[in-house]
Length: 144
Image 1 (cartoon, rainbow, N blue to C red):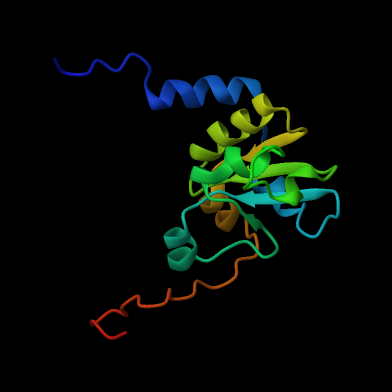
Image 2 (cartoon, one colour):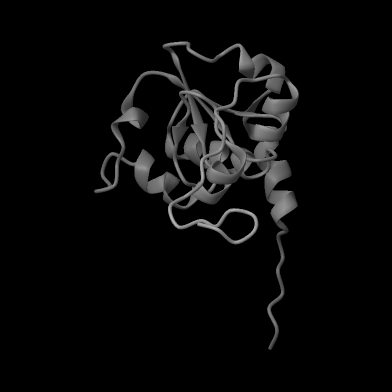
């Protein structure tokens, strides 16, 4: 019998967005360098390598987020135990809405996410560290 998906990913995003703080990208750019804020980049390492990254952002791959937040987990990252505001972002603002809601539901606070994600960040003139080729990644034309 085929699967019948009853909740769409977009409906989950919309529910999350009603329950979390959303920060316009232009406002998020002003948070760079603040000691009381951690910008959390949940994009995949391939996205970082292809598109670049926000200087000073903490990279927490979406697939490990819950384990890195949970102090009882063997994968816990101490940054998530600090008394700071955690501002999540992904490429376009969908995954980060879900990530911020999950983090908030786990008890991490305060949390928010950047509207428009990394794309919005760049459009708002936010600083970006240039993308770096991953080891073994081929350049255009097939050269390593």
